[in-house]
Every structure is written in structure tokens, then in C-alpha cells.
Image 1 (spheres, helix red, strand yellow):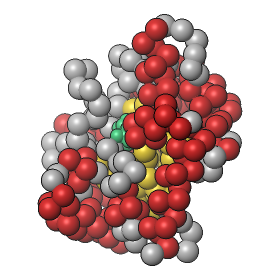
Image 2: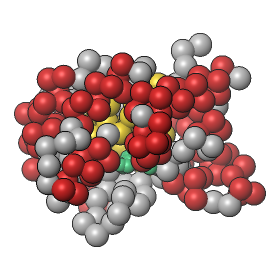
Image 3: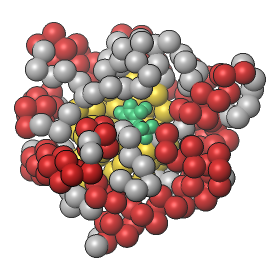
Image 4: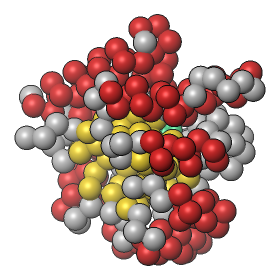
Length: 245
Ligand code: PXP
């Protein structure tokens, strides 16, 4: 069995750079180190407010990433235009609020206006040959709407699982597993992410149909202590063990 793939989100390398307005640390260099350490893909979120990743990063990453380049973005006309120009392998569509610290939840697919906006964006991206992933809450309706919208991949939001007290984790894993199985049976690939850390990733990686994890903050934080190469390798050990158990 192929192990679950690790896509490292490098946004917070750019956060550190933007904190001082310097040219370092460069997320492009970080992406290369992640790949050398065994990461299967690189994820970067170009936010409307450009708080961390910049347009230049996206263009250079497209030139340099040797694995899979996953661009996270909101489904706005501006972002769709950038994605079509840059041509990432995957676009992950996420909800975006200006004031939030990080993405707070999955796409509000119960809202018809949201679905209409997504349908337009998905159509253009797929026409441009880009695989489309939708970041959704792990519930059956969100999976159903994603399928109807023609998503290739769903990324299940693991935030609730990560935030719940230990005793509530079993229930959250069941929710994630239920959504994952439904998505896979609808023919979509299943990814997961948000808030995953070294102690809590194992259970998510062990969900049989989960193929890919997007992990950022925990890996970049650990990198500040032990180095990026070691931080990526440590996470791969956890994922590999879980996926084979
Ligand atoms: N997946 C999505 C859709 C995200 O928006 C983020 C945060 O940018 C992540 C995964 C990674 O989350 P974290 O930084 O908590 O690992």
C-alpha cells in the first residue's frame, strides 16, 4: 500500500519574511528543502490581503517545485485569473475572511450563492487543466455538494478534531472517516488538513481512504527548533507508520 502523501504548507516561512519586510527566509528555498526531505507536495495559500505568500512566490514555486504544487485560494475572479496564468497542479478552494488568523472552517456549501460562485471557478480551473480540491467540513452534505460541483478532491477540515478535548476525538475521527468513505465512493480523492500536529496526525493518517495530508504550522514551528529537514522527516515517519498499521 502506498503511504499517505504529505504536502507541506510553507505559508509561515513567508509569514516570518513579511514580519520584517526582508527577502529571507524564502518560501521557495523552503519548498526545495521539504522536497529533499521527502515531502510529496508543496502547498501555498495566496490570500487576498497577501499577508504571507506573495504573487512572486507563486510564480517562482511553479518553476521550481518538482513534486506537486497545490495553490490554496479563494474562488474569486482575481485568484482564478492568477491560477490560470500560473498553472499549479492542484487548486484548493477555501473560504477566506480578512480578519481571520487562519482558515476557520470548510466552504459553506449549503449556501446556493456560494455554490454558484464555486461552480464558475471550478469550470474555469478544470478547463485550464487544473485539478480542483474543495476544503470542506467533514459532513455528508458537504461531500454531496462537492461531488455535484465536480470536485476532483475534497480536503476534509480537521480543525474540530484537533481542537476537541481528547475524549471527543473518537467521535471526530468517526465523522472524518464517514465523510472520507462517502467522498471516495463518489469517486473523489480524499485529503485532510488544518491543525494537524505531531501527536494528533497518526489517527487521521490511519483513515484508510485518506490519501494526502496538508500540514503547515506544526512543521514550520518544529523546524524553528530542529530544522526543516528533520521536521519534515519526523512527520513522514508518523504518517508512514499510521498508514501501514
Ligand atoms: N489546509 C487548508 C485548506 C488550510 O487553509 C491550511 C492553513 O493554511 C492548512 C491545510 C494547513 O493548516 P496548518 O497550518 O494548521 O497545518
